[in-house]
Structures are given as C-alpha cells and as structure tokens.
Image (cartoon, rainbow, N blue to C red):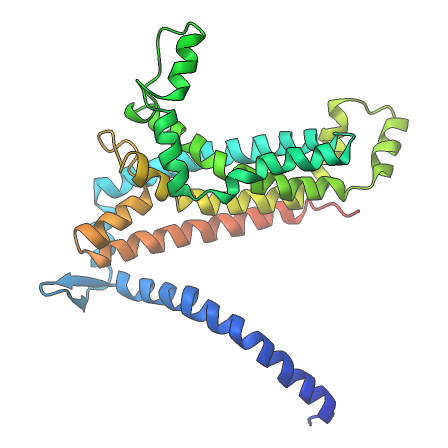
Length: 298
C-alpha cells in the first residue's frame, strides 16, 4: 500500500527531474561507450571495416601480443613513479603550507602550486619537451652551469624516458593533490596535536601518529585519482616521444590509439580499454578494503 502523500510524491518527482540530466550525461558520455567497448572486445575486424562476433579470440590475440605486454609494463612503471612523485611531494608541500603562519602568504604559495593544473597535458608536453631537450634544453643548460659533465638525455634515453614523462605528469597534477591534502590538514582539530604533545610526542612522530592516520581518507582519494590519471597517460607521451625511443615509452593508451586510428583494429583497442577499466576497478576495490578498517574519525 502506497502511503505517500501528494506532497511527498511531488518532491520525489521533482528530485527525479533534477537527477535526470546528470544521469543522461553520464549514461551517454561514460556508460554507453563502456558497454560498447565491452561489446566490441568480443568481436573481430573484417575487411570493409565490418565486425563479426569472435568470442575470446580477440582477447587471445591481444594477450599473446608482445607489444601489449610491453606497453602494459611501461604503464605500470610510469604509474608507480608518477603516483609516488605526485602524492609524496603533494603531502610534503601541503604540510609545509599548513605550517605557514601568515594566511595571505599561504594563499599565494598555494596558488603557485595550483597554476600548473590549469595547463593541459599536451601544452605541458610541449613546454617540457623544450626544457628536457638534451642539447638546448633549460635543464641541461643549468646542469652545465653547475659544472655537470655527464648530462642526461631525458626523453631520448630508453632508461630515462619514463621517469622524465612522470615528472611532466606530476608537475601538472601535483597542485590538485596539494589542495585536497591541505584541506584535509586544515580540518584536523589542533586539540589532537596538543594532547599528543602532553603525552610526549614530538617532531616527526606527530605526523606519523596524528597527521597521516587522520589524513588517510584524503590520501586514499588522491592516490586513486592519480592512479586513474596515470593509467590513462597519453597526451604528454604522444607530444614528447610518441612511444620512443625504440618503444621505451609505449604505454597502454598509445597502444590503444595506434590500434584504433592507425591500424584500424578497433577490436584490439577495445580489449586494451577493457583491460585499463578492469585494472582500475580491481585497484579501487583493493584500496577501499585496505582503508576500510583504518579510517579515523575526528
């Protein structure tokens, strides 16, 4: 039996109307392409750009492709470096900013770190492609001025290219992480630190036993977001190296792009997209379970 009053039904109807545009947007922009990608991954390309059902054959083809596993390994390597740089430095910077006494100075310094987030990854790739140029770049010019003789090759070295691109990525993303972590730090009551000091806790122990545990929700959220952005890295790689040198920076999104728009293998591209989605889903679930029992309330 429906016990809703006309007013409650009107409120329910109004709420649905307000939510519908957001549902429509997410449905068309996110969920529909995701379902299409899953569907396309079980098909194979035929001559004339036609597709036919192939079951798991396309998955077998992609998973036996050495280029796929190479790009997958490069992506994971990049993700570890980029996320570690971004979250680690953002935490240090946020703590430093939180300790700035003058609020106006804190706001100015925060804005300095926030400005790079306004730059697109493509533009950042162009800027840093010049900075990291082995001969004319600003980085090596500074190293030469400091007397360094063995200059790094950065983007033109097979061993240095992934860390170099990770630096570009972290430069763009670090400001966003700083804002989230700084907001979390400012929401921690000072009484926790006062009580800890009374008990004899000093220096770095305050951050280990008070700051970091109370900041875990923000650290977890920032880490998840940075993993998502890192696994989807494309713009800065395409602008700076296009997968070089000798495939050393070929990442999953570049593998997806090449198969979709250069080789016209949309089926293989769909498998790569599904792989990225599954990796992110698994990471999100694991992270949620790891942090579930370690949340601290104010």
